[in-house]
Every structure is written in C-alpha cells, then in structure tokens.
Amino acid sequence: MRSKSFDGMACSIAGALETIGDRWAILILRDLSLGLSRYEDLRRSTDVTHATLSDRLKHLEANELIERRLYQTNPERHEYLLTRKGWDTVLLTQALIQIGDRWKVTGEDGPPMRFVNRKTGRPVKLKLVDAATDEPVRISDVAPQAGPGADDRIRWRLTFPQT
Image (cartoon, rainbow, N blue to C red; front, side, top):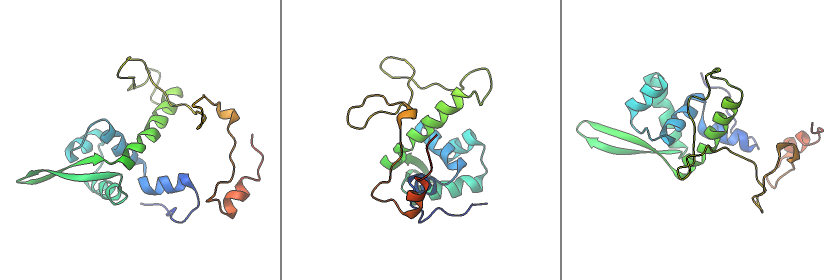
C-alpha cells in the first residue's frame, strides 16, 4: 500500500523520496549500483514479489532513475541500468550502509559488505565537506538556512532552536 504523496511539498528530502519511491526501490537501486541488471537477478537478490518488483521498476523508469534496455529478442528480455540521476542515489545507499554498519543493525558479526577505494583497497566513507574548499565539516557545525525555493513552512521550521 502506497502512502500519501509528497508531490508539491517544498522539501528536497520529500522530492527525492517521491522520486525514488519506497524501501524496495532503494534496494533495487542498491543492486543496480552493484552491477545486477536483469529482472530475475534483482528478484533473487531482494526476494521481492514479481508484482512489487515490476511496479518499482516502472516507477524508477518513469522518474528517470533507470533505463530499460533490450538485451534479447526471442523471447524479449530487458535489463535495467542506472541513469546519471540514478547513480546519484548511490550516495543515499552509501549513507544508509554507513549508518547501518555504525549501529550494527545486522548484528555483531560486522558489516555484511564493505566498500573500498579501487586504487588502494582502503575502506571509504561519506563525509560532509565545505562546498568551496572541500575541507571536512563536523555535523555539529552544520546549520540550516532558507534557500531560494523556501516556502512559509520551511521558514517556520527554521524558527525552532537547533540542538
């Protein structure tokens, strides 16, 4: 069952979530970023029902996160590939992995998957950096402010004291 739409809400998070869809779509995007591209491989990886997988793939394609490409004609078979917009969602999946690993959500055995720099083999992680200098910024030093697309609700949210 789909929840209420975020359509029209002046919020970048809501817009990104509306574009992605739901938790199944995030797992599909994860798998596509790992190189899985065929329907049966995506289904095997997620153990999602055919109806849900088909629906999420159509949603991701309609929102230009993936493209469907014919790889076999008899019978007709398609593969699914991330678009440039879809590749941007890898940041979201990496952030979720980093949070899950930090809080050991899969148990005490350690992370089920690691991401490393191809050149060095060393683990990688997401960090906040200053947009102009690329210097690291601590989360405690980050403050929200109204942007050019802010509406009254955004401005209202920003009236609350930061903790």
